[in-house]
Amino acid sequence: MATANSLKPWADRPARRLRLVDCTLIDPKDGQLYQHVTIDIKDNLIHRMTKLSAQPTPADESLAWTQDDMLTVVNLEGKFVCPGLIDCHVHLATPPGEEGLKDTMNQDPSTALLRQPFLANEMLKRGFTSLRDCGGAGLALKEALVEGLHPGPRLFISGHGISQTGGHGDMRSSKDAEYACCGGNTRGLGRIADGVEQCLHAAREEIRCGSDFIKIMVSGGVVSPTDRLTNLQYTPEEIRAFTKVASDSGTYVTAHAYTPPAIRNAIENGVTGIEHGNLIDEPTAQLMAERGAFLTPTLITYATMASREFGSFLPPSIAEKNTQVLNAGLRSLQIADQAGVTICYGTDLLGPLQIKQTGEFGLRKQAGLSSLKILQSATVNAARMLRQEDKLGRIKEGFFADLLILNANPLEDIEVLDRQDRHLLGVIKDGRVMASKWSKLQPDGGAPKNIE
Image 1 (spheres, rainbow, N blue to C red):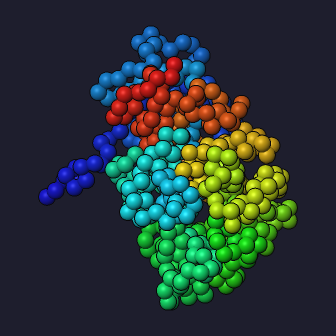
Image 2: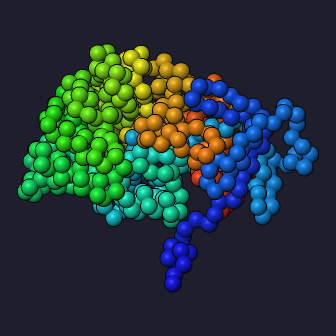
Image 3: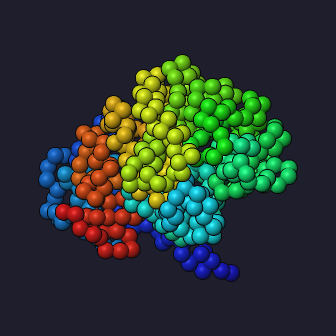
């Protein structure tokens, strides 16, 4: 009988045990710093945490890095340990490799699939140990990352985003032919479904194909060629069809929405998450807070598409829509924050723009949010939305060993997380050192680069 190693020879070997000694631990739940903490990591989990006295590290552990066959010890005196970050709105199915929006969205599926592991690993090296893909990534990629075939973050997927005909997920121009008859057709990141019966079928099909949650489009969008931002998409009955399937499957629905009517249409019919929300008003934000709904703004995508570096990414015909949501973005974040909405971290970058993933931290700082609130959006808030708050978002015994080693405190300046080349010494996911720029931290499977 074939062994597991022969069936899947790429499968990860058991992770080495790690002991991180004398670190300053950041708890994003309340912003507390805990000094002189030792973290023991075993079997991909935080096994034990102990607080040392303020005395110097014992002489036999004075080397910053030691190892035997059973245990690797890393002295982190003067270093900060933060939970791994969570990006709640990515599109791995639009990897870099093409120049403009049209070519990025129309990549050959085989080409795009081969490029996706590179993109996932780049995100991991930026400190994102978990990703929530809001349209395009499939079960094959998720399983490849879980099995260790490719290095990358843990992945939560929606499968295809579901759109009405002519909605945000319908990328045909006004002169393109129909997809086919009977609805439910897939193309690129999206899937078309009209009417309650098709909506039920599309949602069930995405769940069958391994989706962790359902993503729908309830308003117009920037990159969709034939709708306006103010378009209201999907009827209450259609939205309730999606939320019924999700509830029956033990999961939830999130919705692409910009305007107050679209957001209300979603929330009042059982949707628990809103993506973007740039045109939100105060009463609608209050409704979201009362219902316990999550908001995932993605300011960096609009700023990047409007930048000089990527100014030619959007065709002129839709660039004006980007300007509208860009100008409203910072204010929408302030409105949601003041209303008490739970805000998560998202980026929604496409193709070559994804190199700007950590730029969202600085934009939220510009909106006036505190460093703690911004860090919470990428850790504890995100974990709650993923329904993984007992496993992700904090460094606690029994949680996944996903953490970052930093030489500066992001609670003093959140843009520390946007300056990885200077401050991100190492990324640990599932108890493995997946990336290291510090000479004292040996990565799994390779020699470290050097930041002293």
